[in-house]
Image (cartoon, rainbow, N blue to C red):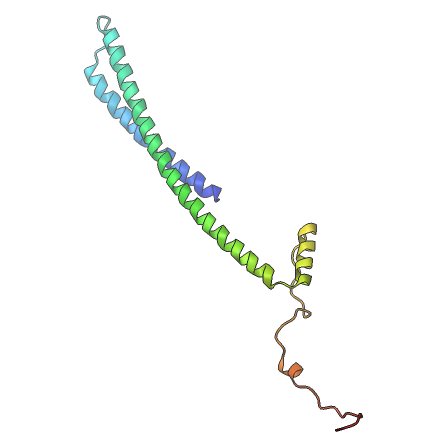
Length: 147
């Protein structure tokens, strides 16, 4: 999985959520400050009103966070689905290549895997289709009895 993509998407979501929450809280508190008059006689009621507004703001932040998390989960599910499909394709390709490889090539590959060395470049010793020169056979004179 691409962790930088995940980090960027998550940072963007948190940043957007933070900006939304700050603007909401600012508007909520500015609206509340016009209605709340703090004096000694009504301090209990204003504390309750502020507590209610804080609780509402926390609920809103919670719902926005849940929404952001749900969106991120959907993105990650899609990435997982794509990775599973890619893995399946690579497994099929690997199986095909194993069936087409000669025993010598498989032994060489296993040795490279165990030593951790990079694969060697193909050499001239690798079998290929016969060339026109190998198909032409020189005529030979036989010294044996002819029929």
